[in-house]
Image (cartoon, rainbow over all chains, first blue to last red; front, side, top):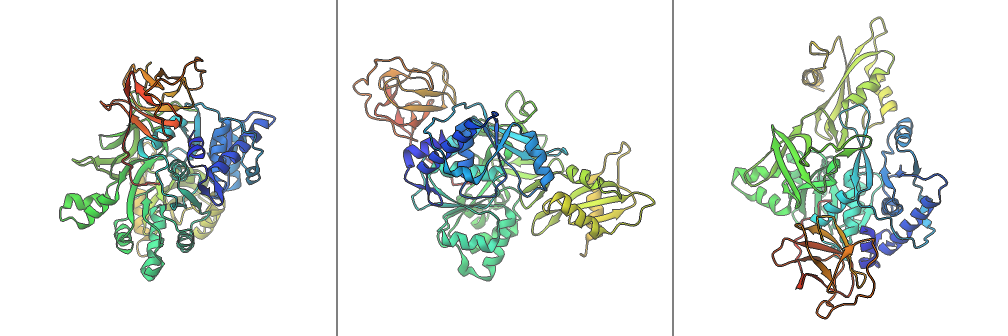
Length: 464
Length: 101
């Protein structure tokens, strides 16, 4: 429906690359025709491609065909990719060659309550869970927060977050709905980002804090590299370090900054700290207003917050809250219990203080410690492992592991275990810090005391 | 007909389709002067646009009633116009949020 609206109302506008919204609709029909012609019926269209011009075609093509779209993390080791694909069966895998049709003019399959997008989150359990977002949820997000066709013809959004993130999915949907061309970036690099932003006259962009820190570092050296057309810079995905944000505001005085807080399960943004809030916070003498720079802003229309025993609860039509193979995770009154610890100030500004559970957030990537622990335990000399996040200037958090070796084995080289982990887990999840210990701090019932592990690892890495 | 957020409706006289953004209970939503029906179901034939309800409905625009308890969004445009009973709906002025993605 979203693509149909864009193609009906903004058909001649460029959507991505040289493709107009009318071209995207034709290509999406082509994808649907291919899926319809497959011998065995499929329920999911998976994609293992990095960002590219195919993004809206894959996403809307799946929708057009009435199957779920599941963008997967292509940086995972091949075995993990195969596991995820197997869990989505019966599934087809999107191929860029599908961009070429055939367009048979078929209408889109219209089932608002069907799962539209499946996104694997690491969660806290060992096995990744696929969060389910229905068409209704995503449509509620667009209809409540955006105005159709409201973007100017010259606007362009640089999409540097990976396609398997909710922010990547939301960028495609929102841009299509407002009529803003997207400029997909396959692999983030701050220097390339600035080049692309200049070359494509990018007006809007979304970055995670790690990206902004690197962009700021380049601009500190050379202010002349400010993206000339950039008007709006949204950020989210993880807690933004205050020094990075303050420097960015100073280096890009003409840019509107927007802090977007949201979860995969809530169809992306549920709270926004807008440009005026940023300016007010920077210029105000009132400590309450100044402090709002550290907040996530206020609820978007159609969304409510509650703080229950310190935990952030969210309710609204855009909240999915279900996972493949499980019941909905929202309670009887529609509240999603996020696991984030937070508070609301008198004017409804939300402050998120941290995760109630132990998820590590490295450069905007949520990483489940248990998954890494389980992998480490597969190494022949590792007897026990505890994984935590340690503060990191560049990434927000870095992955750190404390391991206990099997008795009688040769002493393990910590570098060797790091290398081994990188091969098993990929560079995002592999621990940067590995410390061998005699035992893990545990409760009498055998639960690892992560807080104590974190303290000990912090002490042992101090001075590095 | 009973409306709630997400309900999708089509005109009985032309191409117009809407999705309900906000509604309370039973609403006599019409397009071109004739009751709208569920999207995807065929309209009863023979109806034509009534005078005064032919001002057009614009794609992507939000329409509200005077009291503000009904809001619908046009997903397919057409020549007929929306009303609750005989009360025409008005275009709602947009107050978009800053872009967040």
